[in-house]
Image: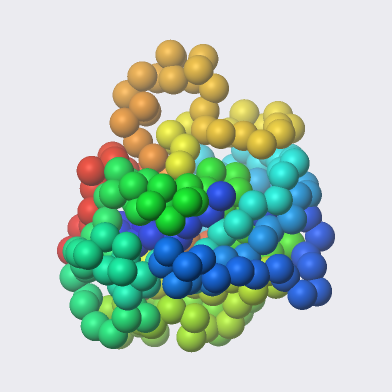
Length: 242
C-alpha cells in the first residue's frame, strides 16, 4: 500500500467467499506476511446504503476476480522497506512497524518487483478490502481505522486495529494505498479482472492517463474518505501533501 495526503504508503498485492482460515506466507525478501485472497465476485463502487459516495464511485459494477492472489496482510512497514531498499522516505519515522510513506507510484512498483510481487489492481484492492462485506466499511470505524478523529495527527504501527474477514489490517485509514491502474470511470457494465480504464476512455480523456487511484484514506482524513469504495487519484510522482 502507498499513501498520499499525510504520507504516501504502500501495500503489495499480486481478492470470493471468505476462507475460515486464510492461507498466509512470509516473504523472505521483506519479512512481511502475505494473505492469499480467493477468486470470486463482488459489487465494486458505492456500497448499498452509503450516502457519502462521490460521483466517481456511483456507477456500481459487478466484478469477477478469476484468480486468487497474494496481498500484504498489512501496509508495508518502514522496517521492511529499509530491508529491501536501504532507504526510508517517511515523514513519521519511528519503529520498524510504522507504515512507510512518502513513496511515489514508481518507487512503489519497484519495491514490489524487488520482493517478487506487484501492486494490486484497483478492483483487487477493493475486493480484498471489503473482505466479503457489502457495506462502506468492513467494521465499526473506530475499531478498524486510524483517521482524523483518533490518529492524533500521525501514522500508527500497522496491525493494531481489527482486521477484516480476510485477516487484512489497515485496509482503510492510517495511510493511503497505491493501485496499479490508471484512473478511469466505471460504466456500470459487469466486468472480469478489470485492469484500469478502457483504451476508448483514455482516447477520449487523454489527461486522465497521468493519474493513478489511491485507496483507503489515511490518518489525516475524516470519515467520509475512509471507506472501501472511495477513490482518490494523483499523478505518479506524488509523495504526500504534508
